[in-house]
Image (cartoon, rainbow, N blue to C red; front, top):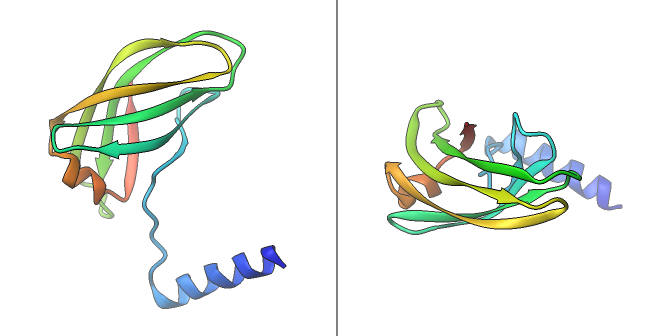
Length: 114
């Protein structure tokens, strides 16, 4: 029943033309076993939770690039490198080097640069 409802919602979204979704959590491409969630924005910075599901300790840090629906850069946030222990999560604070939190909220796509 739930599956049929989900398929129906997707079909309605496609037919009505609102098929875009805002990225708020997902896997980090290029880093196996790492995922992000719970992004909260301020004007000058952001905080994000990064989860490590591997059995190894990992150093993580880099740049989050926020893109609009035409793949133009609208904001960049820098995250300083720190260690995430195995099978745990860590809350990172970042700062915007380009754009602001208001711009990042309106982003459709998110890319990671290491």
